[in-house]
Image 1 (spheres, one colour):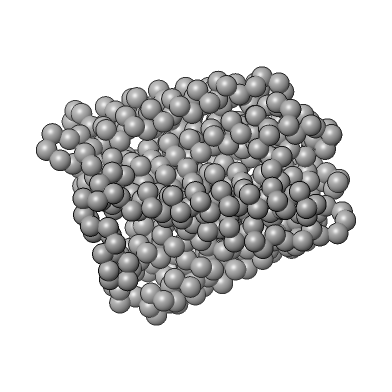
Image 2 (cartoon, rainbow, N blue to C red):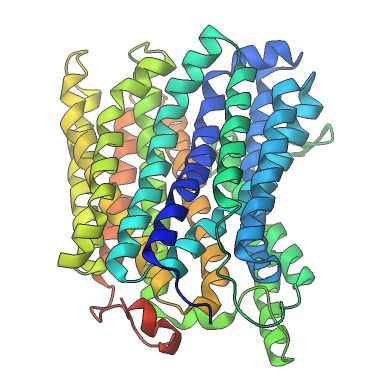
Length: 494
């Protein structure tokens, strides 16, 4: 087992890790404010640019588990640097792209693969380098704050850069930040496991990637085709497969994805029985606290992305705000996340992770209930501040606590497995949040419908479900990092 790094080394690692998470989160929202000029400069359509954005999401989601497992094969720092190099190369290609094809290669493929390689090591390194649970919570709070800050400032920074310079300059900014991160991490140690590198499970990687890709694709398709009857014809290569009014193709994609994931689970069981190294150890699913924690993570990301999406759409469609003004209105939520994330270390010293997750959900539900007033009354935005701030405080509190709970439930030898699984679950929740909210908005636009209120009500119900999962978390305290290797991973832990 690797020895934990001295506090000064751990502190030095946090800045590049937080920057790496920030740039990934920033890139996910910055493109949304530049779709029209990108389509014009790349000689394509808005749909073409949106396809590139979707392919980035699919690539990252599909490869998160294999990318995490590669940290055991290549080493955690080496995997992080490889991801940074690929991501930076992709951003550079996107910046100089003459057409949609190069944009897809750079942004969707290289940046997507780079994200899948560099995001899991962030969470693994925070976990294995932390000397105690409170310090780990503090560092996870910094990373969570970087996520929120990147997502919130993406439209602001991207909009300003696009207006003053060009959307290409936004990609060049990413290249510069990535180069800075590489300089920061190159002299830091790599707390890798001792011993020979395990054999990489290629079959498992293919099955998991195919399954996750199909599931996320189905979720993303729901905005276009709906969850019930197909809103429009579904065609493949110009041939209509499902006519309008038939069953939504979402379920076809989800069913195929479920079959692939079932085959993946059978493959894992067969691989373990043969004494070989699987892509993912099945013992991870025997931990009740981690299973419930993963459920709360999925709900948190669903609620956060869904709430941000609904609020942004309402402000832009109903109030006529541009992307920059919308980002400014959402600032209270970002501030709430940053404040509670910054206090994560102090919270962890005083309260259990279970208590923090429950409290976070209570605050978030209360904030979202206040946001329901958004669809009534006058045009002022001041009345949205209490709801957004309260929801942000709740989200920041439970995002940090949930990831700390899940990562801390396992010893260092399982960190690559649980980190990839955790990030895959979070990505799925994030995709589902936007897709679910978008589907409700579209389906509620018929006469008499209240699309934004209906979306928020659905998200509140989902948040309450997350609160129930949080209440079911066991009360047994988490083991300290120094005892994590001896922890029985199938026993209930918090």
